[in-house]
Length: 238
Ligand code: FPP
Image (cartoon, rainbow, N blue to C red; front, top):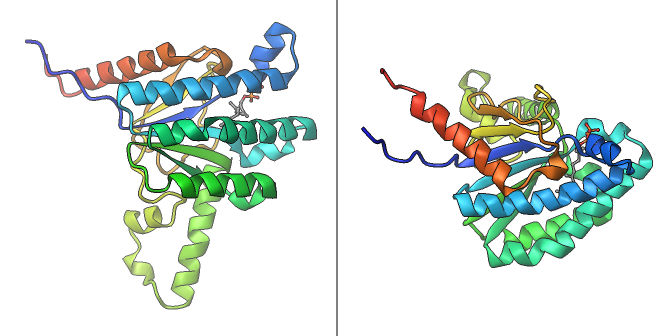
């Protein structure tokens, strides 16, 4: 019997990996890989809209990435600034809300200001949610949550025995965002790399050998189909 089509994942999280290797393959500097990677970001935002995915979280810069060469960090910050400048109109046209998770205060002041401006301007949109993980680490997020919880215990506003899953969630960077249903990692690496450690507990994982700069809508749709196929099998007694 033909079954109903399974709905797409509501939330996709992506580890965008392989920019450096892609550039090396072409004999180009690493920043060229990041530049083309920014095109892939545009493509997946479009793809999510087409496929009916509501939330997209992208691992754009980790807490560990600060040890990269200064030039590369500067190049990435510039790309982020250009991305905001060149794509803000598309967020408005499609009513997509931009958010950031991570230690925003670590970023250069100019970038912080630009991000806050676009976040404020898109805050009322609900059609789609683009969440950039910047200076993000899953452990850092849990450390930040524990600190807040610790302060509340200290000032008497929280009873330690009342702490449950929801208490932790409420102290994460984006408490209202549903957990990802699907996590995609490009360039073949089988690691979580400190990404959304709490939130990925029940996510389906999908790893592709495609380097991030080559990742386009078609690759996103393939990942979504793989996700749906897993769900079609799930619970099937035949
Ligand atoms: C990982 O590839 C990628 C990053 C650390 C940065 C991701 C950034 C972008 C895609 C561009 C800008 C982002 C936005 C949101 C506009 P890698 O450098 O670790 O690659 P490698 O493992 O092959 O060296």
